Length: 257
Image 1 (cartoon, rainbow, N blue to C red):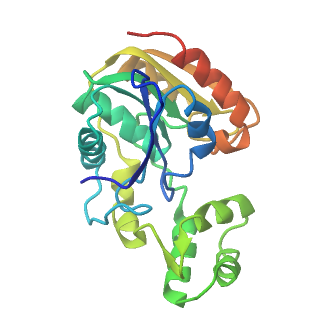
Image 2 (cartoon, rainbow, N blue to C red; image 1 turned 135 degrees about the vertical axis):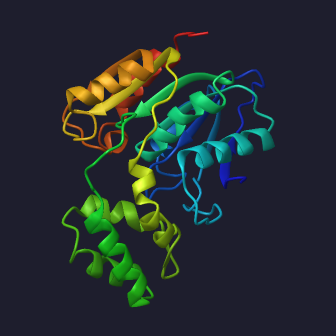
Image 3 (cartoon, rainbow, N blue to C red; image 1 turned 120 degrees about the horizontal axis):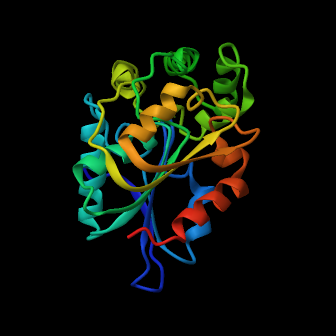
């Protein structure tokens, strides 16, 4: 599947390519505050994962398929070598690429997720809110907000979700995401990635807090460094953009090849 994308090409043809991959319920604009920082120095590709944004919908949604979609899109653009930055579900997707196209992957940045099968359901209330809006057949954002506030207390989460609300409908495929939620939580251990990788966690996020999470990173990414952004939650790139960029720059500026 060729994904919907935005590709900012640098004037220097020899510039390296950075690919930004959003998380669940997101779209290609979600990591824009990071991506725009690199327009002056890199080619920058931002994509909508399948069942999100303006990419095609599908009943099937595994990390193997999503990684294949990303490679298909890179092939379409004749991008041979690239570095990946992925958040949450997108972080798992980019980790999967080490298995399917590791020889083409130069550097890897994973934002607030680990290579494990999560048991906790962090999105039950979100799905309830999304389905309620979908069933209500409403016409405007304010009506959607009022419905969602019955289920969700965090205004930031509501505003994040509304970025994918257009003309009374969700851009992402709510039904497919719900049916494949177990697949999204799941993970099959990959062959150990031997190159340096950067994992950035939010200090207040539950996604990368347990010792077993750290062990999973080290066992599958033997040269991983794990950095913490203090006082940041799961959306650390939006909450603490400058801090995240500073950590990323130190890693990306270092030639790992």
